[in-house]
Image (tube, rainbow, N blue to C red; front, side):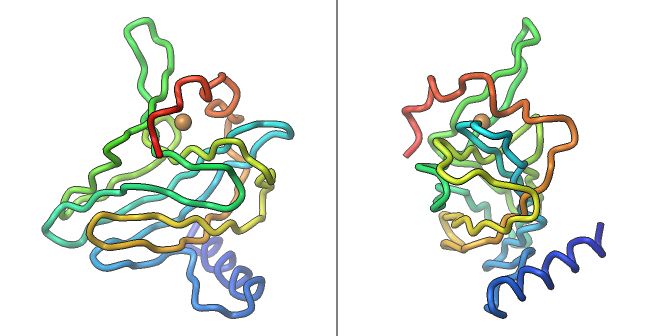
Length: 168
Ligand SMILES: [Cu+2]
């Protein structure tokens, strides 16, 4: 895993002309680990993104908003399973708190970034710039690596667009 990240970083630096953008990066007290987007099937209207956010400070921070150019908008979502065992996701209009001294993982089946109305399909191997806006640490552009999701794109194809109007 470590080797793969390093290789991807090297490739990213080549692809972006040596600009000082790392795949893993630090902004203030926050460390963003392995930002990635699951490859979307052809024609899928949405794509999901994941990242580990470690808060090395003592005060809580909050992921407030997400911006990108490859989709019309991006939202911060939570996935839950209701009593009937149905998977549901909903936007978090207040954003996502990152408590001091803790790591919040955006991962499959939990918190995630949802890119709505994808205009350019994310394909494995792509590096996609996404801006994350934090309440205290400010905003930062992270390079999200597109990878094939292990077990298919369950986030993508269940009509989530319907309940979307709250976010940004
Ligand atoms: Cu979602």
